[in-house]
Amino acid sequence: MLALLTECTVLMLKLLCEMYSIQRITYNEFISFTENKLQFLLENLNNFATEAERNNALDILGRCDSLISKNENGISYPSFRTNINIVQ
Image (cartoon, rainbow, N blue to C red):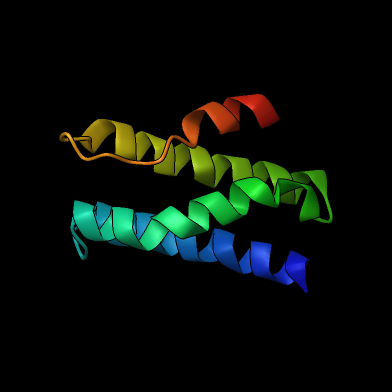
């Protein structure tokens, strides 16, 4: 069950990145919608069945990191970037 939740989380994060990229949601909404999902994904990277799925999760974490880094405007955001580097 946890593996399915992690796969679903990756799909939701992809959707949120796309929605933000095409300006369907604001930066603040993007942060709000992704905060718990990013933390959950980081905590469960070992629950993917294959290395390809894990790499896909790391890719979406990197994409979220890129969007957050590019758009930070003094908004405090939990630092998951350090954790990404640790697990890679």
